Length: 280
Image (tube, rainbow, N blue to C red; front, top):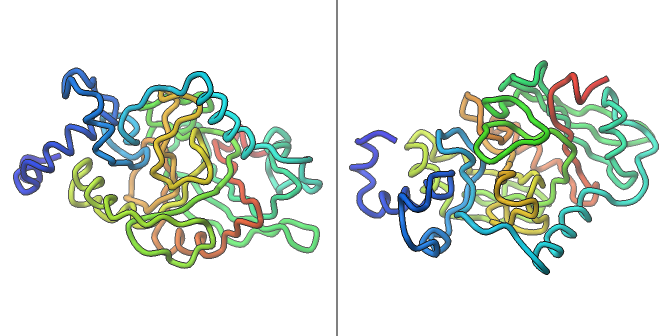
């Protein structure tokens, strides 16, 4: 962030920025001796382009004991339900088609030519009349360091795999999606404090990708069932013409089309990763 932005933001923004840096992987001991201070800040945002790693929610401990069982159950229950779909999604490898359940009738496929690429495409498939039809394909960006199955917080990669799409939100009002939608007026200031004024609108619309999160909660929910080191806050959100720290980004018109087309009753999934791993 530039000195000019900080001067304009003032003391409250400086305090918020310090709390947000804790969330981004900075050493909490360098910022505050009170770990509850970061938790009380309430900011949450996705894996996005920043030198501080995944910009997610304030730091929290990995769940243990009964909490760990509960959140792990939530995660696995959302990712695997029932038998495999009888008709494979066109072009996907068996490893990926085996993760698409029979109940699913909408699948998004995000892929790029190589594992190191930050530019990708996203195609929207719908199952109708006993066959999959590609409705649209969009240009997208993914992690600035490409794709990785065993990603870590702050490594600037997008996770490889098949994930559910359960929840949406954003700063602006619901654009017409049937997904559960949470409007959050903190998102522009979160983006501005962390990235500068040019990023104020990138969280206007969001679809949460259910990687290391608890489905059925707002996209800004802080729970990380697989632990904090795996990162989180992986979203579909508005593009900013460069690679991200994990999110997949689209132009506004494209994301709004997806939000209006996606149907919770279709049990939608997103399959994503580099073409050598995702496609036949």
